[in-house]
Figure 1 (cartoon, helix red, strand yellow):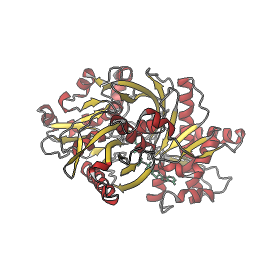
Figure 2 (cartoon, helix red, strand yellow):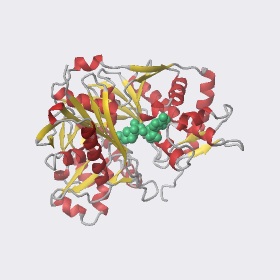
Figure 3 (cartoon, helix red, strand yellow):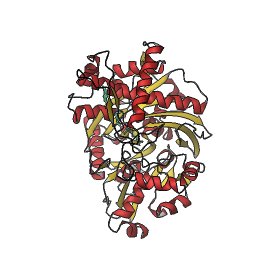
Figure 4 (tube, rainbow, N blue to C red):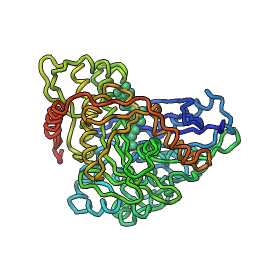
Length: 497
Ligand SMILES: Nc1ncnc2c1ncn2[C@@H]1O[C@H](COP(=O)(O)OP(=O)(O)O)[C@@H](O)[C@H]1O
Ligand SMILES: O=P(O)(O)OC[C@H](O)CO
């Protein structure tokens, strides 16, 4: 037993967090700060990369200060992050040349259509495991090089660096010494060949990306340099994209094990072992993690809007003061209401992949109000996961007997219960909902010998199991209505608009 601890940095879509874990994998402390979302155009989403780093370093500093941590008490640092979000910065000054283009941003949809029309989709799928979509980094990076004054020439002269958010955080944390990523994050750029785990020359040429601006691809539990604290060096030894980190944090180490994370979006991942499984039902093939250079693959169902729809209830509609209030409000809804919300604010991800779908509310009657819309919004999260889980079971040939869940939004009991009802399967909620941060801590801790795989398998703690209560007939009726609504929300924006 060690009295040292591990710090996980979780740089999410809406907030930066630093979380302190002890050897029993319990949370000892959390520091969190929200940051600004910028919406400069229709379905454009940006973050100020400097604000991302400022909030991330500030929560790290407050965690250290609040717990009076000295360097010898911190065994290692792990990093996990919102994936795909693209940053380009000046190598000499560390200054970003443009805002970070966020994974939800759809500005490159037309470029993606062009790629599909010219037949690149099959090859891109084979190489990267991904479906051509503006979700991934490649077309965002291409957009920056083509649209920011002088960026392409500077990149070709070797003056600019590219990174997803992990790379940006590592660069800043190490004082500009390390330009690296891990395989799970690199797999989300649409530039990585997931069979050999290396940047793909042909794709770099397709998007006109100079190879020298790309980070080195490391294993997920590896040496990523160090963070200087009071003259001592704390090793950074774990890095993974947040959804893969959550799969690791839920100890889904065996083939066929799966989890679903309810954050800004919802992401269901299944470990498919050393072999990639190619989906026939709109899922992605991705790298779960790489350990000592050995890749483990996953099938992924990415749902773009989940907790973000609850934020929409709070911020745009102003129906609630806090995300938690959505639960009590939904409980007040008229049980007969037939309102359905399709939260396609950023198009639809798995299994539909429609960049032109947009959000819609159906089934309104004169008595529909805040409660009915809040309930339908929470229900939409569960329906989206029903669609993804079905696809996953078909692709993997594995029938899941239960769903392991985590993430901020699943603290909502109404949602957790309705999810169990819709799936007609138990929903298992762990004590630590921060599986993402836990996964990053595990990856970091394994590398420095703080934990062994054996230790990790023993610590999983269940807080509550939600068993299905609604009848099969009711669920069939509800799902029929949901499917009808989704079909009507598709292709809303005209491609040439
Ligand atoms: N009790 C709740 N009920 C519903 N949604 C919630 C609740 N608590 C948090 N959320 C939603 O969950 C998201 C935050 O979860 P988190 O795991 O921190 O996400 P991220 O890592 O994407 O920032 C927010 O979008 C918020 O609206
Ligand atoms: O910030 P989160 O937790 O919603 O995760 C975002 C995903 O990584 C996007 O792919």
